[in-house]
Amino acid sequence: MKLAIAGDHAGYALKQILADELKAGGWDVTDLGAHSTEPSDYPDFARAVGKAITTGMAERGILVCGSGAGASIAASKIRGIRAAVCHDTYTAHQAVEHDDMNVLCLGSRVIGTMLAREIVQAFLQARFSNEERHVRRVKKILEIEKAQA
Picture 1: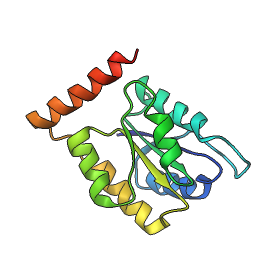
Picture 2: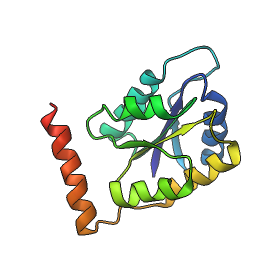
Picture 3: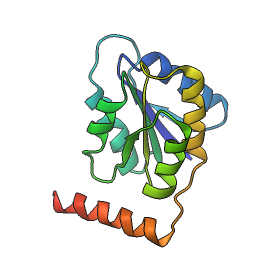
Picture 4: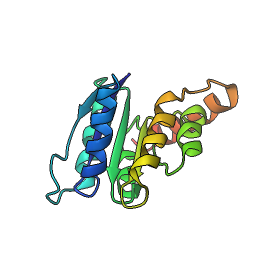
């Protein structure tokens, strides 16, 4: 699976750890920045990850900012992106299985490295269930998105 990962200055350190570990684990990872702790803006990175997914450069994305909230809000504005803040493993896999989430958002000031690793693994190992009720609900989400165009 091709992954895009990015984070602002607040998420930089955790993003680096996750990106390096994912690459070492054999994942195809594109790091879209930030590349330092210099102040930066999470919407720029949400846009980069969203574009990577919507153009087919990546299948899923991971965004890291201070709380995860800003990145999630920004990414969810992009047509085709279903992003959520997940600070536990249940939500990380359930959001993929039921809601076809394609962007995981993490708050580096909220969770530690060990939990972030576990959440990322839950996200990456999960697959959309394709159960009728979940397909129906995701279709409704897409209809809302389409109506906003």
